[in-house]
Length: 196
Image (cartoon, rainbow, N blue to C red; front, side, top):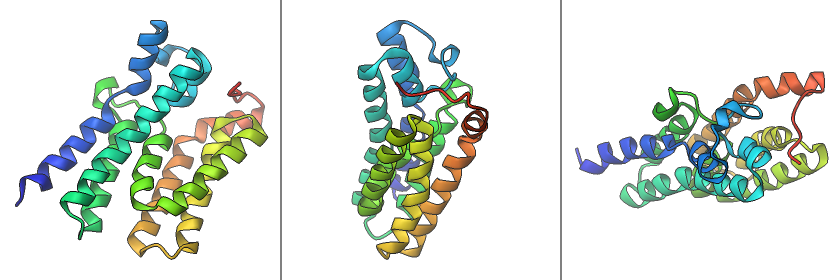
């Protein structure tokens, strides 16, 4: 077994697990982001709590956590979609259930976007457009995220993506909805936080 087959998946989990939002909120405001706003250490809560610069920095860091290990996997094993999917999945798992914050991380939207930019570039562009539109119309980042979760697998099918990647897109979309159950409840009760 080649070293990359072991090293890259492990590296991917721990890179994904770096709590970007927690670190950036500490740096910008000296606060524990888990104790502010929605309590989620993701880009949306950092944006609302610490400002645009901190929020965008968190989003970019989270995207790169998904993109970079999959990029390495595609170069190390260009013939193995399964290996690339494994590495991408571990980055998302690391972000959502980070060992550094007692396995309580973000919702995985930005990290999933980083993974999908590598594996499904055109469907991801469509999903990003849906995110922007959904967030702008509703004034809720959560609505944008769930809109992207719907469009990603649909666009994957429309562009004729390989079955394994289309399945990945569907699983990511489902996971995004599951992670947003508290947001869905707040939306129905009118208590969801705006992003402005």
